[in-house]
Image (tube, rainbow, N blue to C red; front, side, top):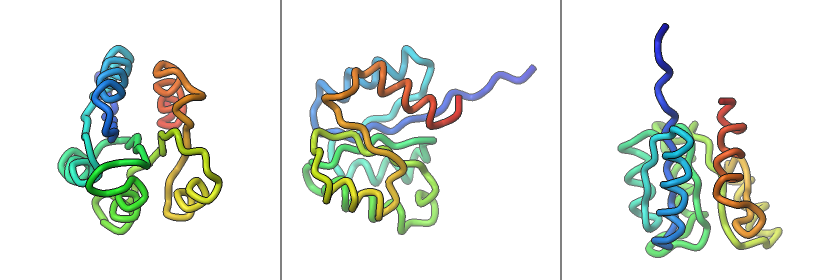
Length: 127
């Protein structure tokens, strides 16, 4: 029986502590984890690593999460990668814009523990 390859998640967040927590949680859950500290790095890593899922913060240095999302969805190699927005911004207009640009889901950081975020991603990936 062939072993299934672990799913790869890209976490794009500008806070070191947040990236570390999610990296640890996803690793414990047997995911491969790639992290990026800003929007530009997130775009680069998405193209290089072709993750199975991207967790994307909206408030990012160099390039906002919304702009990253726009670029991901316009680029053939990355346009089919599911993107979950993970943010503390609960503004309807931003959420609506994210979905209009192709975000596949939206998680409010304060409403989910890191373990719950991993669980949501697992459900999302149909694991």
